Length: 124
Image 1: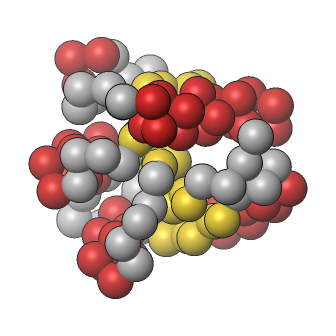
Image 2 (image 1 turned 30 degrees about the vertical axis):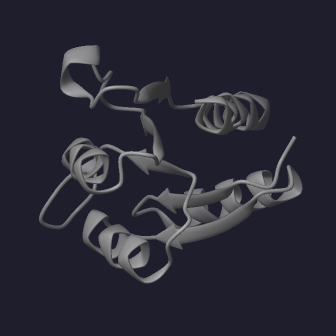
């Protein structure tokens, strides 16, 4: 079920660590970034990311929604999963093909959402 390369973007270190454990246990290769700016740097340095999981509310020059649009423009094959416990992203706010999952989520929900994302990438 695993083996996708996933970038987790969240300013909360404990959330990133938890997500890394969940997704690594599911067989994925996982990288992390603490901000949208750091995520762009990671994507520039490490090609081959299949999916990104980003929180909306983050410090820095852009939030997770702005990051998701930038990723869609520069790396259109990366699937995008947006999450938040404060905001419910509307379809019109997200780039084409992005998905939203509300916090709090279960490990099963995250693994299933990532699986759905990466399966759709590989079958397109």
